[in-house]
Image (cartoon, rainbow, N blue to C red; front, top):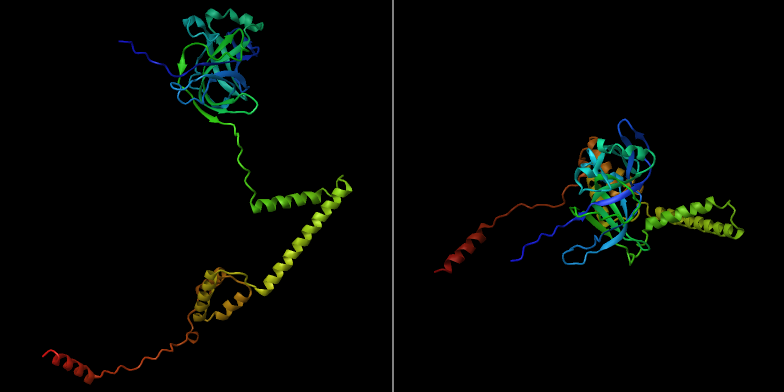
Length: 352
């Protein structure tokens, strides 16, 4: 029987190097300040995040420009974070040459204070003279976004990531120093923003947007008339402004004529019904004249309701003179008992 094998899923620890001399060296504490990483794009190779099922689909590596968003760094593992010799995690304690304290964000960079161990204190003199001046970070992605680009490799924007260690490295400018060993970590959550091959049709501007844009453009034309434009352009601008002024005057004349013909303006059937209801109520309270006067001034049904409520709140009462008596006359009831008995007798006779 074949021995069962377990396939480990995940991604290896990533490496990113930063070249630069330590800013300060303190011999007494065997410490020096380091820049661990920045938001500078670094070209690396990563497993293709567009592959959803690597057990079935071919999962190759693709080249990307990686950007570590400094604000998205996970600090959960930075307490007494190890300072390693060239990312060596397989040589036991000998590979750790110190620790990194006070890991913090400083603008667009992640910095810290490296402290050498007693056994490796001899390195301090070389560091002070500029040797071993390159720092490399070991980290893993937690959440990232792959942004495809038309004329370049995709951009991998790592929104959340976890820092594990920092290393002194002899050559830290290797852009492909990504896979270093077999240790794996949970696969990060990566979204893919695909390149739009068929851009969506531009949505036409709404009328309000068109009017606003036209007004802004006309204002800019008026403001620029005194500029250094040619006589032909100035004449075109003048004709445009004159045309706009003429159209505005025409619209105002039409509006003025409409207000003279119909002071109320166009109303819906529902509004007209509400006006008649207000008039009926106003007649009962002796306020019909006031409502009619307001109506002539163009007052709409909603405003008439408010006015009528004001009348009632002010103490207006129903006036008897304005209530028309009913025109229906009810006659006296007359009961003809002769016909009732005759009809009953005929019914009994029919049953014999």
